[in-house]
Image (cartoon, rainbow, N blue to C red; front, side, top):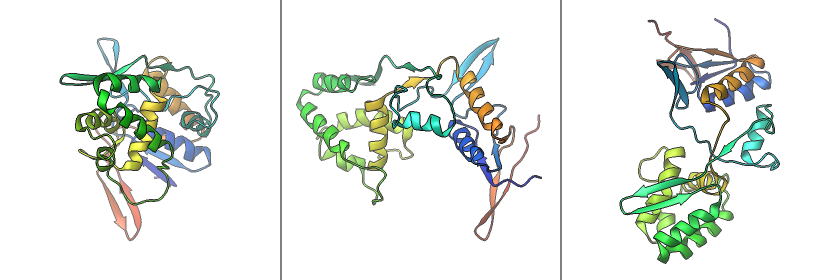
Length: 247
């Protein structure tokens, strides 16, 4: 068994991106993926010769190539991929639908404000104040956890509007069921409501193949059908094992 400096459990988009960055800087990296192909929640399968995509395929933090400091373009530089050669398809529109109410949003932030003015006319000024509050909030500064629910209720004063704003943010980037950390809320609010969604060109299969090829170009290795059963600890060192699946 070869010795690896870094072992990544899971060959989804995050695992592949982490693997590329580590391998690019000379680390010996192994990704363990329990399925037959990469992708995790963003994968695909064939049914009667037709490629069917699974999972979430709208990616967040859209930015045009010219915005050098945008998160998307910084990520492409870290992965040593050409952002200008990577064509993107921006979302036309998304919609949050609750019984009796709906809110549309797009990569134009003004649409959501207009929708809130239509559905919640008494809360639109509060929502504008919320956006102003978030502009100056640094989600990466070290700080104790703050409840987003408490923060929103002190500004919006409308529980249904809170729920409708939180829904897409919690689906795309939250591990809690009924609340989220305020710093995470700010990150996801900017990613979804201010920068917006996009899709890669072609299918997710082609996008994953591009990431795997870049990972392997830097010397990274990936094992499929290798689910991890448990992590074994010896002191403060993790000793790992995996179980190779068999037909």
